[in-house]
Length: 244
Image (cartoon, rainbow, N blue to C red; front, top):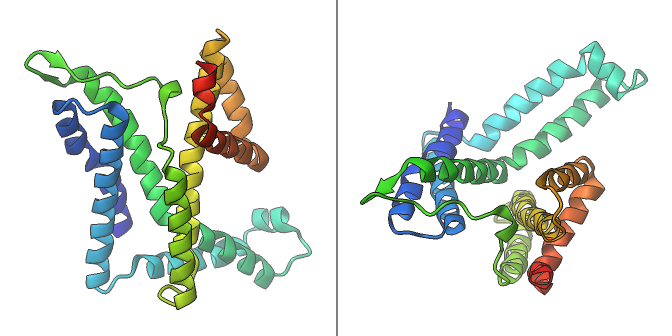
């Protein structure tokens, strides 16, 4: 139940914030960021309520993943996938580790869902919402998406804080680290995608070419890393400004 509420909060709560931002003529990407923050705050509030009611979200997820791991470990298709020479205990352990890692990424996954939802919702709302007969600012082209340069400093500070939290024993697992890493990887990948769109735009190539290249990158871990590094390089060296 709480997980469903968290997903609903990530999708629904950005809407009133986006509407208010449009009324103030806030730039589209900033409005989307405010929507993401609203969704994230709502999710955290639900997690706090769940904890106060004696329902730890992560403990519940861990129980569910353990149950799913035991159930799938005995499935013939999973046996064939993991290898017929593996024992039931080995398959259960491997699936527990896999699902456990996915459960740890719940906070960052919901923030990413909120980001995608806010982006789509802004596009839809900007087409219908009006104030005094004036439409909201249309969504900026994705090739103009830019992270601030100080995001790199923030990235380093948050990683340092996560290391301190882990070492001091405030949080025994690396859950803070993996979620910070996932969020910044997502942000830098978006920046890398904007570079590819800008490159194709300046070369007068169809947008479909950029989409195909991006899909190709996203199909492999190496491609995802290259996309992230491209975004990181753009933040530091402003590659798109040179393209312009």
